[in-house]
Image (cartoon, rainbow, N blue to C red; front, top):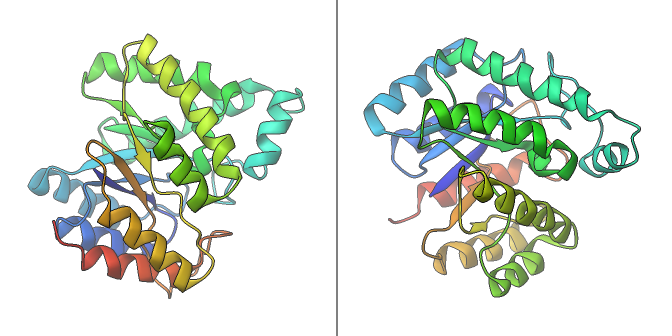
Length: 255
């Protein structure tokens, strides 16, 4: 399964994701529900969901500056602030619940899955809130699932760390704990994960991307970030030029 993050970040990125969904190049996308979420884009996603059976999820955000969603800081500072009590877990819980409510208001249905911007949903201190939400959504839809950003085997984890760098170790540690808790609570999650890519140079990016897709693992969830070079909004460490390159590589991808 190939899932695009960051729908709602910028209309130019959204258009690229919509085209990939229409053409069957990706299986779904997760949506950021800030004030900039475009109603037209929402309606297009809903139409494609009916025609192409795609999945639409909620992309929880605590770290990106976006209108209508509180930013708590970088992913590392957020984790440290939560761990040392400088931010109350109740504050991020309120944000998670607010974003779920905004998703329901925008789409008139519940998300098919939940993941997080920079994997903020997987941080240990956010897990009890996430599990509570996931239990409620599973009761409504037994196919609902939550993304775990952890590889399925040690060899796969080593490959992901080589691609994504040292921060990947921390994220996969969160992901392992999250997967364990989800399974204990009978909530569906992915058994394997890939998509840690250096968004720094076109050469390194292309090499890594080819490696991921030429050596696709069975039952693996692949995270992607396609977009437009002309978008107004750019996420740190995710250059828009490389999002555009990623979109082209996905469009050229053979089934």
